[in-house]
Image 1 (cartoon, rainbow, N blue to C red):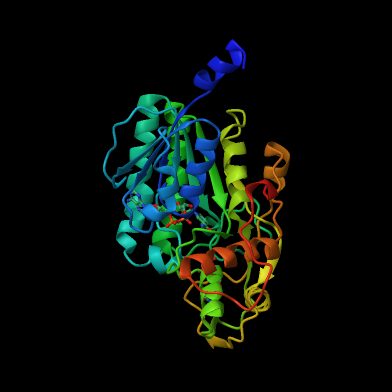
Image 2 (cartoon, helix red, strand yellow):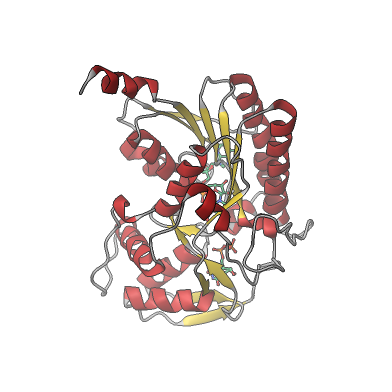
Length: 340
Ligand code: NAD
Ligand code: UDP
């Protein structure tokens, strides 16, 4: 290694703050940032995140964990902020809706204030939920959404919409360097086993031989992105030129009905679980799929992991953490190189 290469290890190194860093997506992001040689400060109140998600990172001298609730101010010195802290599954964000709105709005104000004071670049994990139950299909970033402002999902949807407003106002008013990503349904290893999301629910039900709970008639659609693909998109957006503020959709544009998902998981696990039908939750979106033209053209980003391959990896993860074995062979966690 010559002198220039040696010095670049330190000059290219950034101090990155990841809020919600002990969660599903946050832990994968911390891991990737450390692999790139950066210093990572993981801030989390462990509401839905866990030490187990980051246990493998704790020995790294460039990794630090702080227990903190971002609805309260935080004073640290950093170069980049990734704001992911917020419960994300309907079960978790409806558990304490007032706190969900607070994390989204007060949390965003605190992190934007930190970015303004330190001059840090700041990334917001927004969501396809800003489109509500969409009337435009697939959803482009220009679509303004169809959100019920007083329904049970509103604490999250409207909280995230208000956070986007704050990001763009801090950008216009104070010149804060922002990146806003709208994340579509993402799955993979380290999903919370009790988050009630469709992928984790169906896999756990299939592995334990319990009935698969299909809400509605299963004709509603989602488009599922594997976690490693998604994190690749985050990093491309953060490293894009400053005028690429977003909002930008990141997701896998392959649409699947929830019934098809159940059948695929049953086949891959070799499970004999029966499908049972349950009422559709209030305001459950009927159709969701991202238009990712912006991500393709501005970031040169494309998801690479097909649903079946990502599901095999996720099933293998749940088999490991639940300590169960399945009759189906050929299931293993996916190496990172497979993703975009
Ligand atoms: P997650 O619940 O696993 O992670 C959220 C993390 O934030 C957890 O570690 C939790 O303990 C932490 N947290 C919650 N409130 C906090 C607070 N007040 N202060 C500090 N930490 C707090 O969820 P996830 O799937 O990893 O989602 C991460 C982000 O991505 C969220 O902002 C979510 O809205 C967004 N998102 C995720 C998806 C998805 O499919 N996973 C889709 C759209 C948007
Ligand atoms: N769903 C289901 N059974 C479950 C969990 C979820 O049929 O056990 C459905 C849910 O009604 C929704 C879709 O799966 O139509 C995706 O739900 P999830 O909670 O994963 O996320 P959402 O996209 O609704 O935020």
